[in-house]
Image (cartoon, rainbow, N blue to C red; front, top):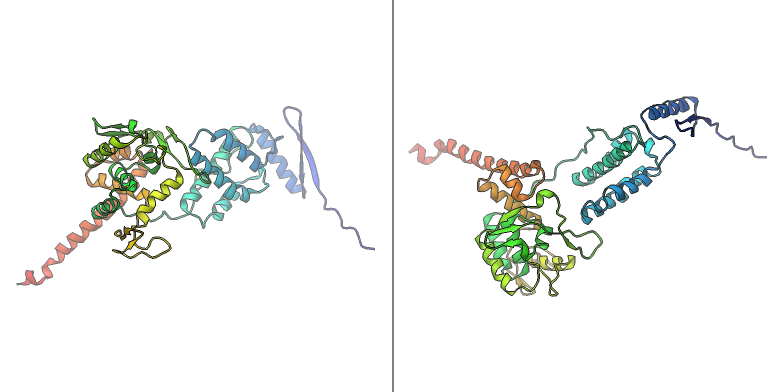
Length: 381
């Protein structure tokens, strides 16, 4: 007759809370039980309600709705929700809020090491917010996410802005298309994609030569369209931008024939949907060497479009080019920060540092060439 397996011995006790409620504690060893009792007493002294042993997943979902829903842009909320469901919840699985320790945070960071620095940072900020809220609400004594916790990932390589020749070639290739208007606005004002798609004729002061950035259209993942709202990326995004003569004249011509409240619109007068924007941007991709499933050769025509762009371009690169041009023109950090709509000067400084490094490298090269000129044949004559 087979022997019945012995049931592992469990040690248990209970602690009575200030409200008279009993909280039972169990452990596999006496030492582990003593540690749990000590921890529970410390948490009680810190004002933690130890009778609420809430699963991390339950609190995280509640936190997202309570603290973020309706308070951030729909696209930002979608990113938060995706990161929580895809990267954070699977890692913590069935853990309780009170069981998560600083070690678990470090292991979470390590589990994300194959992803971009941006995604790692977003997940860490997400977890930091959840645990800080739990501490504020008396569910844990302190957050396991420490101030010094950082992701360990290299910064992505800094993009090179378009040269003057490339910017002019881009506009020349797109002349007569909606993409021309989009690119001209981006290169002339540095507006973000959503700000351009939400731009209304009422936002433009032709007499003063200014665009008042006050509308935004932010696409959400898995959604075909999004409304135009006054909810900008940050409050710093609400700004007044000089247009310049070329953009002013172009928009004045468009205004005469436009029947839509939006500068860029579809046939029904509505702002561009996600698919309409992608279709518009094909005017750029189809004119770019190597784009698409069919390799494209410079100077050849495909579908009636001549391939004339031998460089890659995307909407954000136009904004990056604008910011660099401001530095080239001698504007200071504060001026550029305002015009770019950056909420933090560090964002502006990152572009400025790259610009200065490149500028100094060129100056150094010229000075070295001048210093070595004494070796040239002309100097020896």
